[in-house]
Length: 259
Image (cartoon, rainbow, N blue to C red; front, side, top):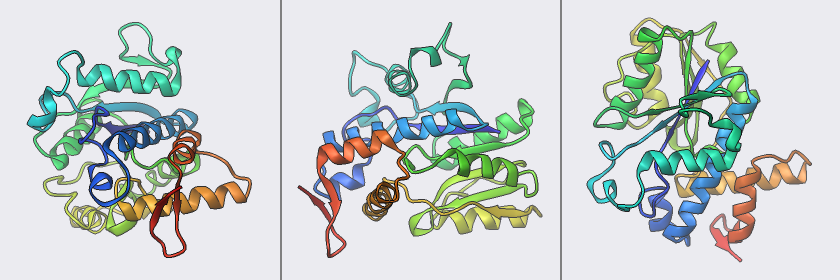
């Protein structure tokens, strides 16, 4: 399975903006958390049986206020640097297109639905991929077991969905392309399942996992990180390190706190 990870350049105000608006995190804190989540997600894919394709947003697909935020850097270079930091220099070789399962491609499309749909459809129909997974870069708790599980399940079902908080999805696997127009409308998991069943496709499900791009998802992530630590099941090292550095925790009343 080709595992597509959509990644934004880690710029303040662009990534995890809802956390800046609704939590004690600053824009710089949000960038640090986002970079850590991307690192953990890429590590999980690298350890799985899937082939990693980093699908980055370039200046053409970024909001105008972020397209030229830094004239000395370009989005592709920022994303490549982030992945190199996560996986090491050996992950990028030659022209950087392919090595050790890593591949970089720009996103194409004017909306999230279009960008995901264009990528999945191209890989399935133009490149002849057996299956394609779309894994959110904000799901640092994902492990190879969930990724490989979706790769197995998509052999039985044309579409496999990994639900997240608030009806979203952190992972979606496709053996057949669906109609992606508005397919990621809220609630995503319901809309994607509807599109799949309307096309006559079978739908499977992966275990539920939170993402860190909403306050509720971040709180769930913090709680699971702590539970895994207590159970001596470490993982998501990059995110855990940033959480410790920022002093993030879930308070007794369920609120997000900083020490």
